[in-house]
Image 1 (cartoon, rainbow, N blue to C red):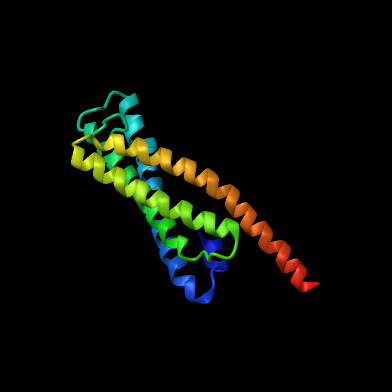
Image 2: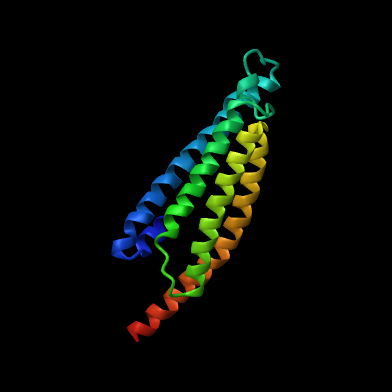
Amino acid sequence: MACLHQRAAGERKIFSQIGLSFALIYATLIISDYFIQLTAVLPSIMSGETAGLALFSIYNPHGIFVAVESLGYLMLNAALLAVAGTFSEKSGPERALRLLFVIAFFLAAISFLGVMLGGSPIVVFEVIIIAIDVVVLIAAGFLLCRLFRGGEASQKTERS
């Protein structure tokens, strides 16, 4: 996100700044969530101290862990939607990234609404959004490589 912010044109930097802000929220939520699981919940379970842990356990489909993780992944999708505004329609990778990030956000939003309105547990949404984000981030990785590699090549040509 920081690289995309640096790369963004002046008038589009607001989108990358918003994307970077949402990405930081995502990272904070996910890191906190897993750190608490690793350092507090898991040792408590392993030592048999399970009183009051039900809401905090990764194994509880209605627990806080699942809810915070789901919120984190929603923030990741908000970050991707915001950063989509930095891409122009000039190059193939930029068009593809923009489309990919917009579609990912709407799939995440529709999934969240569907799960919540359908009365399903939040863990169903968690599985859906992680699947969406894995596919999107793998595809985006390849597209970003093409984008940045193309940028380096054109910069070298301009300097020559």
